[in-house]
Image (cartoon, rainbow, N blue to C red; front, side, top):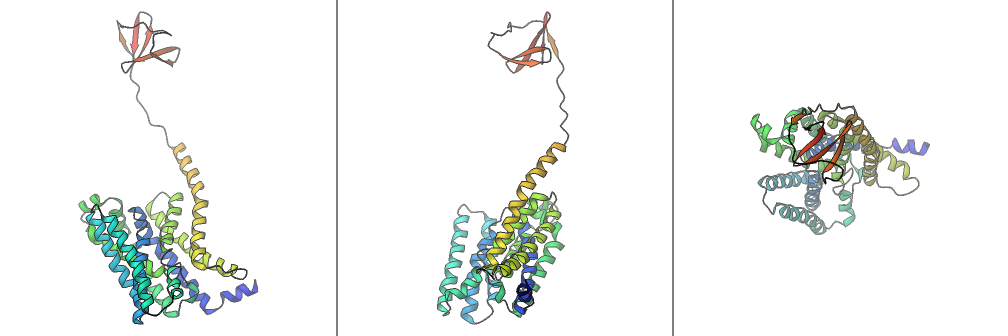
Length: 335
């Protein structure tokens, strides 16, 4: 245990904890709006495009983080424009964009003379290798994402929930949709050193799905998702650091699996809570039709009449032609 505490006191570990903390706050904040709009896999697509941005940074000798931000934002805007136009082959265009981004990144990395291992630190994350400048960039970008997501929550929620209502309310739908796409791109690049570009979508979606199991309002879901994302990021990092004394455990996959474990625990609890809410909900009041007497009836109902019999109080109603009849003395009640 003393070795583990000494490990937490090392500078690279403190930088990693800070990066995980801010990533855990920012990614689920944007993910809440993506899930609300049923675009949960948008972060995965942007992550594929951002690979080309990382490779351009390696080729030009500039910061891969900033080049990834620029390329990811451009890719996110293109994805949003294709989605908005809603062409029949829009999904094919998105697939071409995703695969092109990944293939372009691998190709440019080779042209830059870099090995696949260097690119792998961005694909699957390498949070313990982040520098001081990386931490500062992560903190600044994550703070911007969180402030926009929380500060513009009413407008972004209205656009995500009901675009027709938001348009009638005077909101610029296209501008807010593009804003969410840009925030998603920034979140992807913020999280690429924590969980990696190929796993970043999990940190944007899984905490939100877990929060939805336990909460009923959007604002509670947003807050709970940010808390759960922070717990998964920091907890996964600390867990991988503790387990590294016995085996090679990567922080990125550990963070994602810890987030998934939270969903597995919350799912049955959410089913139980929803069942209790349904039982507590009062039954709707249904007005029953009053009995109507008719003097004549073309059938003599009985056990062998061929019509369906429905027990009703102290007698049996017979069903035919959309009516239920019951003989009472010399007349029939119809209801």
